[in-house]
Amino acid sequence: MTEQTFFEKTNQVPTFWNDATKYASISKDEAFVEEVAYMMVTLHRTGA
Image (tube, rainbow, N blue to C red; front, side, top):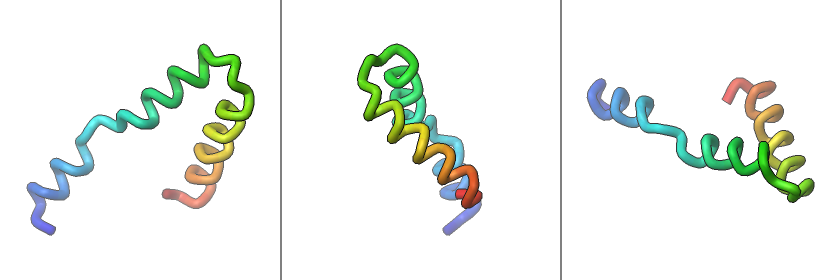
């Protein structure tokens, strides 16, 4: 992977996380909110 390709991929807007965070903050869908929270905590703990 070239530096330019790496730079382009790392600077893309993380749309899924932005959308999921917005939806979870206004949603009454408790199961979805719990799943998003679990994924975020797991990714943070594993350093992903």
